[in-house]
Length: 139
Image 1 (cartoon, one colour):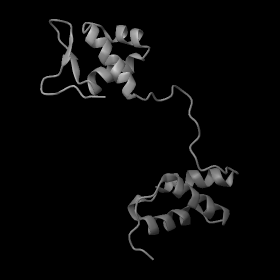
Image 2 (image 1 turned 60 degrees about the horizontal axis):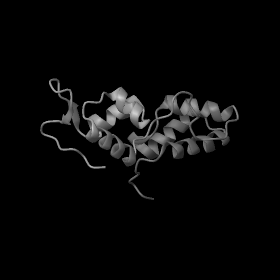
Image 3 (image 1 turned 45 degrees about the horizontal axis):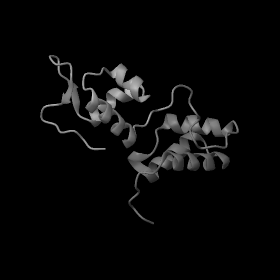
Image 4 (image 1 turned 120 degrees about the vertical axis):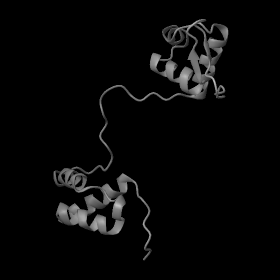
């Protein structure tokens, strides 16, 4: 057997926990066995205990439950290009105005302007300009 064990995905741990719960192994022993094999990368006892309880209650799925709330927004290269074009046309636009013109949320518009385009608002001219010491990132 190989002595080196790489960090594994949490779903793999959960699958092992599920299997051992079905084998009627107690959470404490499951944790000990995981720690023996996976060393520092093993899940903590509280996680093992929580998932063992879920599987004992009849849960079959090892995936995370869906969470309510607003989904995470993804910034795609097309959005960066759209914001860049709008700012090229009028560098004095506010984040709210950029958001309205592009249909991109205010948070995403700000992220694109500051992080993706590396820009900051000049206090005197009220224009978006490249931050000193940084170049605009291409999309």
